[in-house]
Amino acid sequence: MKKVGIIGFGTIGYQIAKSIDSGYLSLARLSFIVDLSSERLEVAKKLLTNEKPTMFSDPYLLFDSESYESTQIIVESASGAAVRQYAKQILSDGKYLIIFSVGELVDDTLLKELESEAARHTGVIHIPTGAIAGIDAIRSARNNLDEITITTTKNPKSLAGAPYFDIFEDIHLQELSNRTVLYDGDVRKAVKLFPSNVNVFAALALATGNIAKIKVKIVADPNIKVNRHEIDVRGDFGVLQIVASNIPHPENPRTSTLAVLSAVETVRSACYETVKIGS
Ligand SMILES: NC(=O)c1ccc[n+]([C@@H]2O[C@H](COP(=O)([O-])OP(=O)(O)OC[C@H]3O[C@@H](n4cnc5c(N)ncnc54)[C@H](O)[C@@H]3O)[C@@H](O)[C@H]2O)c1
Image (cartoon, rainbow, N blue to C red; front, side, top):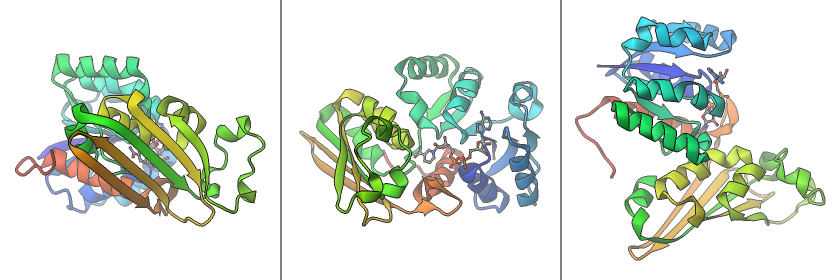
C-alpha cells in the first residue's frame, strides 16, 4: 500500500483522487490534498466517500504535518509556480514526485537543482507522458537521434490570446480560412510565444535530453476540432512517427483528456511494482 499526496486539486488532481477513492487504484491511500483554493478543497470533501486525506489551503503547514511525513508518492498537478514552491523540499525528503507542470523544467538551472536534490536523497522525479505518446521510445533512442520535429495543430480558437499575436499583430486568427503555419523554430522561443503548449514541448525536450535539437511548428487550422501533436523522430535506429489527436477535457479545455488518463496511469504504475510495462 502506498500513501499518495496531491498538490493541486484541479482537473488532474480530481481524477486521481476519484480513482483512489473509488478503489480503482486499490494499492493507493490518499494522505493529503493541498490547494490554494478553499473552494476546491470543498469539492474534494464532497467527492471523497472512503478516503479521509488531510486538507491544506496553506502550503506552509504541509511540510510539518504527520500526513506529509508518512507519504511516499506526491503528485504536483497545480502550476509551474508550485513546482518551484514544493519540489526541492519533497525531493530532499527522499520522496517520489510526479511533476505535471513539466514546462517549468525547461529552466535548466531548476532542473539540475532538482535532479541533484533527488540524487542526494534518493528521491525520484517522474515526468508523465501527459498529452503525447511515445516518450519512452524517444528516451530509449535519445543517443541515436538526428532530427526531432513536433508539429502542433490547433483550431484558431485554442490559440487565441498567445503572446505570439502581440508581436505579429497583422495575423488575425478569426480570418484564417486555411491551415497556416504560424511558427517554425526552436523550443525555447516556442514556449515563450505559445506558453499553453509548454508541457508537451518540455516533456519531449526532457525525453531527448537535447532541447536544441527539437524543431517546433505551430499550425492554426480552422477545420480541426482536436489538438493534434505530430512527432517525427529520425536517427540511425530508424524513424518514429507519433500522432496524438487530443480531445480537450470537458471541465478544462486547456488540459487534454489523454493527459488526465495519463495522470491516473502514472500514479497506478508508481504504486504497483509487480509488472512494469514500457522501457
Ligand atoms: N504534462 C502534461 O502533458 C500536462 C497536461 C495537462 C496539464 N498539465 C499541467 O498540469 C497542471 C494541472 O493541470 P489541471 O488541468 O489539473 O489544472 P487546473 O487549473 O484544473 O487545476 C490546478 C489546481 O491547482 C491549484 N493550484 C495552483 N497553484 C497552486 C499552488 N501553488 N499550490 C497549491 N495549489 C495550487 C489551483 O487552485 C487549481 O485547483 C497545470 O500546470 C497544467 O499546465 C500538464
